[in-house]
Image (cartoon, rainbow, N blue to C red):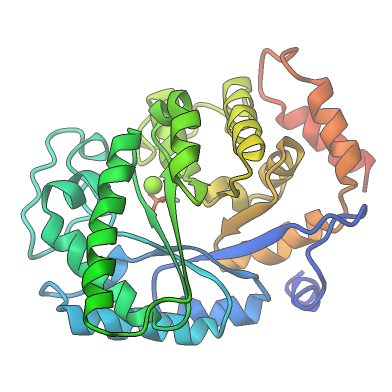
Length: 324
Ligand code: PEP
Ligand code: MG
C-alpha cells in the first residue's frame, strides 16, 4: 500500500472528470516540511505556529520567530504556506505564560481571544511573519474567530504592523492574504459579513464539530458519539460552501475529516476543492480523488439532500464501492 501511495506522488490530484483538487498538508514542526515535498502535496494548508512556542522554555524573541518562519518558507520552496497565528490556551499550555482558562479550556481564554486581549504577543508574531516573508507571498489565518469584529480587530493589528514594517524600509511581502478559521458555529450566521472581509476561509472541523455537537473532542466517552457525516454536519458544510462560492472566496477544510478518504469524498461532493491533512493521508486521499467522477458524486449527494435521518456514511460507502 505504501509503495502504491508513493507511486501517486507525482500523479495529479484530479478527479476522473478532470477537476483539480488541491491537497495540502498540516504542519507544525520544521521536519513536517520535508513531508511537504515527499508527499507531493500542493502546499501547507495549516501551519500550527504554537508548536514552536510550546517546545521552548521561554517565549521566543522576534528574531528567533523570524528565523523560524523564514526557515519554514525556505523549505516550502515556493509552495504556499498558511500560517495560523497562535492557538494557545485550551489544551495547549505555554510553560512561560499563565493562562487561566477555567473549567472548560476549549471554550476558555485561547487562540484569538488571548491574541486580542494581549496584543503584544500577536503583534510580535505578525511582525516576525512580515519580516520572514520578504518578497514572498504571505498567508495568515486567525484561529477561533467567533465574531466578525474579532477578525477585523486582528486585521487592524496586522495593518499597523505592516505600516511599521513599510516605514522601516524592509522588503514587503509580494502578496498578503488573510483568512479566518471557521471552527466556532456562530460564524455560520455572519457569513455575508465575514465573506466581505476575509481573503479565504479554512474550516477547522475538529473544533467546529466539538462545538456543533457540544461534545469534548478529547473525551473518549463522547468524542466518537456523533458521526461526522450526519445530516447537521452535511447541511452546515453545504451552507458554508454555497456562501463562500457565491462570494468568490476560497474555502478549505483543515480538520481531521479532510484526511479520511470517505469523509474527504463527502467534502468533495459538497463542493470543497481544497483539503489539508496530515502528510500520511495525502496518498490515500489522492487515490480516492483519482477514482471519483465528481459530477456523479455531486448529483448523488444533492439527491440525498434533506431526506436523511442519520449519517450518510453507509450510503457513501455503497457509492464508493459501486464506483470502484
Ligand atoms: C481544527 O480545530 O479542526 C483545527 C484544524 O485546529 P486544531 O486541531 O489545531 O485545533
Ligand atoms: Mg482548532
